[in-house]
Length: 331
Image 1 (tube, one colour):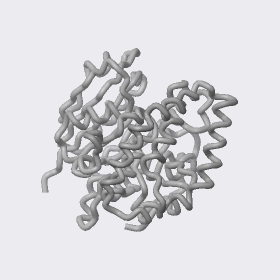
Image 2: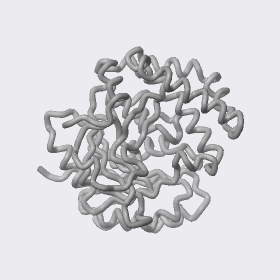
Image 3: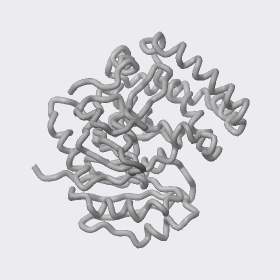
């Protein structure tokens, strides 16, 4: 069987410092055919100048320049709409895949023709800072307080998460999506919901994929380096708009996907988390207070979109609720 076309879709905003290493990593990817689509969201640094002269040997390269910062979600939607490739690799500019990264992900996809796989995610590691490498992500998991966490994040890499398995979700930093799954899970023509802008939009997409019966699979042999900028412990030093979207999307995610099946497991843990978040915003992060006004003003839209999403569910609520209690499941 001929290799399928894979579209590498990247969204940038003031990413000039990351682009040289990013472009070199794409050049080294062994998979072909390949097309690269970079959507720049109103960068004010030299990102656009760097991209203007970029090319990838043996691959097409296209850049789309936007005059507004529509966030990761809006940028990815425009990148995906610009290609007809059957596979889409979402890739951050600060994520550097190893040479065989795409091939490993595709191999895992092909190894399970009996499974309805919508996305395959790999093993991400932080750039070396000491003797032991640090894990960044080995798939995504849910916990009872409605946090979605990257499995293994901040752990020393000692060979854990070494088996392929089903996981709840795939990080948008570096994951391969099957286009028919994206189209099937889309709502009102949006693959990633654009009101999320940035942060948690990948977890929200994975909820919709699972609600439509698509699996997400973790492949440990597909490796990439990821210099993650946004971590919970850095919240106080993050720009105000970053924390604003992070808080807003916490409530949006639950508004769209909480059900009676998950409620008994998540109610108390999420309540305590919400109370803590509100207290923190009042005491230390008042720049995020407008989130609550936004949620109130958009309540009708949120209710309508929830109904739309839930009406398209094809799997049981109990089946999805089980992911709040498990990190992974065997293939």
